[in-house]
Length: 130
Image (cartoon, rainbow, N blue to C red):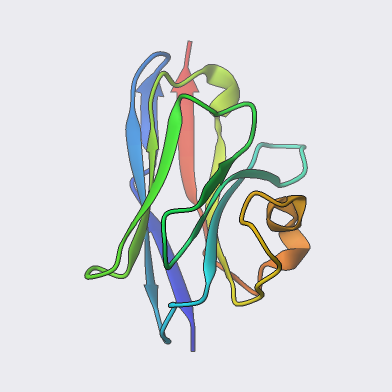
């Protein structure tokens, strides 16, 4: 059974940095796409970033481009989200997600949709104070 476990969230001042981790287990993720999404109180879950487990293709929401970096470590079976220059509007619960569906480039809008992903973690809270 696939499990995704996030960690690394916390409270940080605006301008600070955090690195989130997503430990994946339960299967081989070779042909999977991994995503990070976030959900703020009273808002819908929104796409943050995605990465193809094999290869280096990545995709980002416009709101985080240039500030966030998604990466993965094959040996550790872990996906990371490095978040720099954090803003109060980045405050949310951050969720890791995985899909085995291959529908072209990871940059396609398909991979920014929550319905694309089969597996989800419980989330980790990120709070950015002003």
